[in-house]
Image (cartoon, rainbow, N blue to C red; front, side, top):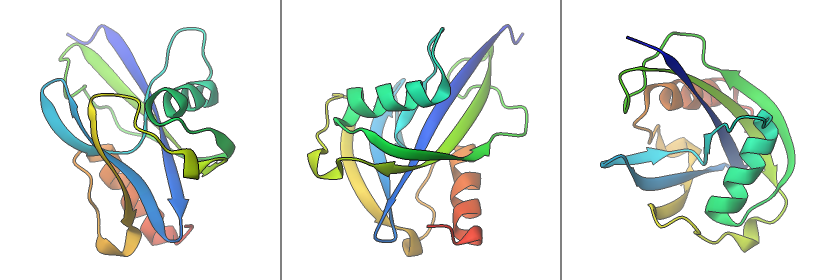
Length: 138
């Protein structure tokens, strides 16, 4: 039975036709994903994204533009009782040269060439990547 929401906010950080991706372990699974994470109570989506980028990667946002909000019902891959909602922003970083992995779960940070194809494991991340490529907004 679904009895809670899990709202996730992610950044599409794009530079020189490359997108920033993370390889990390989460709940015992190895994932390739976008930077970002869970919205906390009392927090706005952009506040969440700024906090997550600072906590995980020592990065700050110069500007952000809404890119996509998940449209379909999705049960969390990690908790059967949670409905997942994901929100994505195209982000310009203020200090990408200061990138420093601060979260021990992140095993690797990669600037992935967009032309090299879809690297993502999570279903909505895959949709967002294809939308990015089809709109050629990077």
